[in-house]
Image (cartoon, rainbow, N blue to C red; front, top):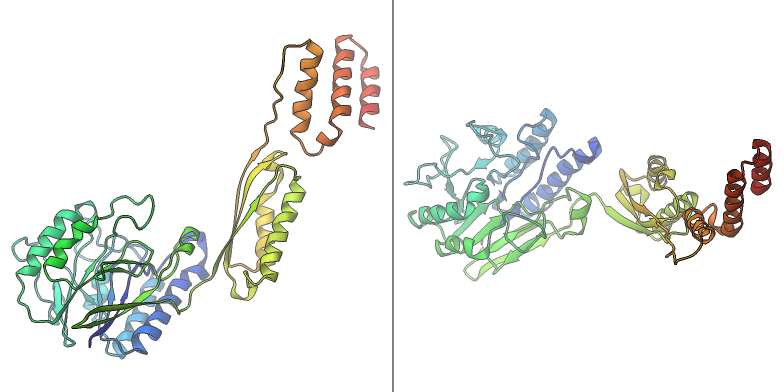
Length: 414
């Protein structure tokens, strides 16, 4: 019974947040997955459904990481079969990329359908190290594809026609396709409808190995997407993701999502303001939330997690009074987080008392009262301050001298 590992969206060379240690996470994750779920389980092959790399142009260290991982499979005599994704496909007008480099060195089998519409699928050969499909000794035919972008629906029809024309020599057919299915992630443009993919099943594909969307899902037990191995951003921390270990038999497909491998832990915290806090109160509340997460076991400083604290709501002071950068550094030190993201999205409270028809004095008093109430430092003494401001205004209109105004203001402040 053939068994293989299906992974996608590895993104070696990931460099968001400008953190070299985070970039290494993606290498350590891939190596652990291959060691644990490919080598130790003696799979027949590993299918990489696109985006091995984060960028088309990669650093030498990233290439070295890919080589180390693929050499692990080569030593265990496990073929690595890959297609390009939108992150690592060949730039327009060029005839090579880093996947092709690794393929030419014999570290992976890169499957690329022909651009000849009459003969889309040519067999992969070890002599040329090129081809669109390969028949493996384990009884599985693996078909490749390109990254088609918006042209995917029309490309599927051509690919299905090409598959039908192939001789039937393998018991099972697996196809690698780096595109997403609609309805899996909100606000995702360009996803394919289920009906767009059905021609591939009708052409004989038993297992469609997808990538591109970083969230695990499956449909009708023939379309499978494992999600990315690591979360590429904080929002993705809520996604289920992993690697599929797949068994193919006469009874059908049995795919088990494996999630037990090395991943950086991610914690999201939230602080909702009430509008009563001073800037110092808010900073202390942030410290208290992080402290509670540590004591409660949600946040383990020894694991050096990625932590996000989102502060939202309204505040009764100028939001710029809170030194966000200093607080972020303090919280990162407290939590020992590899990355600490402090999201500060607050609005200053806008007070406005509905004014009825009245005399000038009443309108002025209400106006002053609104201004004073908008600041936490003054609003508890609002009535006294409003009376003082009105008195200071009247003295100014009466052309009182500077000395008298100064003495009055001093009395007011005392």
